[in-house]
Image (cartoon, rainbow, N blue to C red; front, side):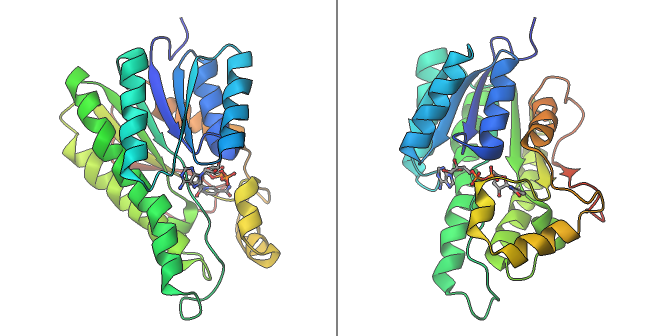
Length: 249
Ligand SMILES: NC(=O)c1ccc[n+]([C@@H]2O[C@H](COP(=O)([O-])OP(=O)(O)OC[C@H]3O[C@@H](n4cnc5c(N)ncnc54)[C@H](O)[C@@H]3O)[C@@H](O)[C@H]2O)c1
């Protein structure tokens, strides 16, 4: 029996990049996957691709920063499959590159809306469904930027640090239940998100990876799939590094 047979997962930002790799990996191991994204054409294509490979999927189109999107995704999972076992909060944006005194304050609000409010909303709406059944696995995609702090990426680094804090808090809130909450902190992975940054900024981040290469989406998905599984039983509120050695703690 596959590891996620009968399990239902919600993956945000599932239309491309790391989110698509996670959705494919969980689906390939038997999960039924609600794929949330605000890019309509990418999301429909991604859901069709997974369906073609035999995965049961349900696309939900919406901005993770809207409470309605989280409500809809949770309801869709419950209506279609009666349960939510796994939530992967993956949707994220890089934000504009610039020093804190140069970026408009609105840029902080924009990045916060996706990177932190989105994670909060999905936890808020999905956790009661997990508690009803006494089981759940939540995996939040933070970033090495949240641990180390990348200059010229303050909104990104600060919101990713906040995702780490959220993970630690929620993990403790749920520690005596069957729900585990953990996060991962990837270093550079070549996906579309890098198009939001300057080449110099990407080089700065690559230069700090001791392995001397970016990560691959499959390497992030492999760690996430373990954290999303029953085998992850004695870890919660924890931060799992996947940064080619960049993390110093
Ligand atoms: N790629 C990297 O180098 C890297 C490193 C560390 C952490 N991360 C994190 O991994 C996650 C995935 O990043 P990626 O590299 O795959 O990015 P990506 O840009 O390739 O994909 C992100 C996906 O999320 C969707 N999305 C973005 N904002 C959304 C919103 N508000 N509502 C709904 N959907 C939204 C996009 O449409 C897209 O499909 C992000 O949280 C990112 O911060 C990425």
